[in-house]
Length: 310
Image (cartoon, rainbow, N blue to C red; front, top):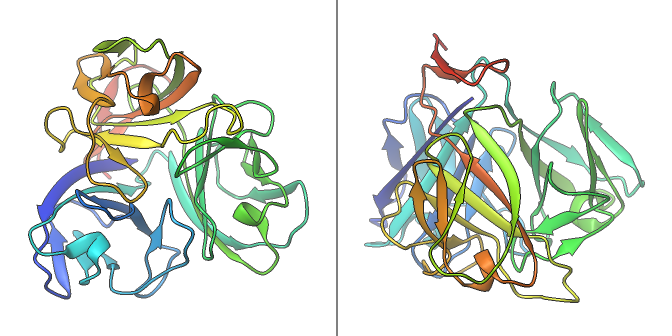
């Protein structure tokens, strides 16, 4: 897998090319430092179509218009290219190690439906309906039928019910399997030195260091594992190495915030006291990613990173 990060300043010009990433991406996620939702495009999401991750809305045009040989092309939609707004992007492709996959399926409303053919057992699956449904996420730290919402981030059931040997299983929720609805998904497999998935119990202590991930992360996502009836309102958050200082983004429509993921460190990251990252009431799941540009892969059998031709 190759995964890189960057930023640009919007200029409001249509058909704008962002280049220099080193490969043709299969997934691009963009979040502006403004009150707009994080959005994404995969190879399976054809044409001039982009989907929001944490908004109850379907695909729209004039966002991420295409995925190109060395980057991607933008339209003028405010989620990706308002004049003078700073935008942060994540670009991913599978490469030769087979640790990333994206795809699509049409919902049928049938319970315990298996989506197969990924080629590995995923550690993370994200699903977004092309309809009025918020994106869902499940990681290998989740138990039973637990699934995270990508806005206020409480746990739900009957959604992504299991991560399986060659795919994942969905229930009957319209968020993942409404009859006749198109769904777009992407999945990662965690390998040593590439992606670390773990959890910690919040303690409300400021400047708290979460360590032991095994590398310097270039991106961290945090999702709480609270029951929505007990503690609603904590958001899913992310920070990349392109974001300076004590700055964190919500997947939802907000400008950058502070006191969440305060820093990316040598063997982990630092959190503040906000409920999105470190409330004493519950548990948080985190996904930590290393920067893997074109030409770099991670061995699945050792803890070392090796270079190879891709």
